[in-house]
Image (tube, rainbow, N blue to C red):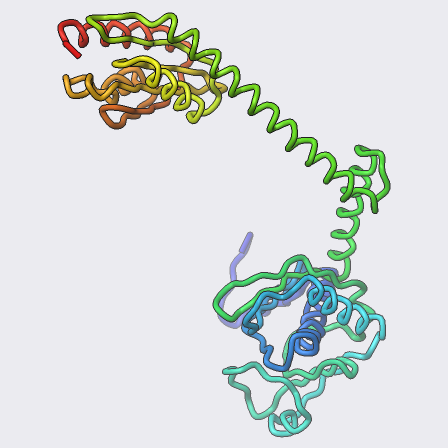
Length: 345
């Protein structure tokens, strides 16, 4: 109530926007046609298991124990649209429940009906017990378009669809996308799939080439890091910022360095956008002497505004302050030196 008040016994006028009611009616009658088409295409075992009808769309749940193929979806959609094109009359009739059953009207399983029922006949395609709003003839539906089909529970599938003006809007939007793609790729609609496949194949090829280049770059970085390693009492220290976009790249670098330097304590840092990636590795002989990679990387991550940790021999962490990487490296190098002094690997 926006203003005034209401009370028991007040007079009221219920109304609905005509366009809203008409679209709801289109979707409702389309639902009846969809139910009939499902039984025709998939089999008589199909039964309604739930539905929603509104001005924007319809949803129909039905019993079926396997996925509906693309070909079956097309046939169902075609059958509904062919029924619409017949422009068959939609005729509601008030009758008794027994007469409706004798005429073969479809009823919802488990639904309770009064002795007097409303039966809706849609041409020769559908006869159901229904109390909802409907169009006067199927031609008023205009167009029917299935948007999706999928599973919602064991043995229950769901179709979502649009009809009337909503179907027109959907087709117009899809057409707009196609025209934009035509303009972008400079090809006709029927050539788009082939053109997209060519682009994807070129993209996959470039990704492989880029991965190869990155791998070579990483191997080159290993040589430089190994050559610049510090030594403390027979152990090596490698602490550096490197060019690596992914944690996996850091692990590859760390493994290669550990393979070439033994024993070694290392901490590598990299920038990935606005994030910090950190990796620490420590040779087994040094972990046995008390050096712990998780402790090193955790302290470095704190300086970089993040956190992390791991095992004594390998640990990873992240942060969000790339500008703190130099300070984190400085402290980590000092920590390694302090810990390694006096350790006899």
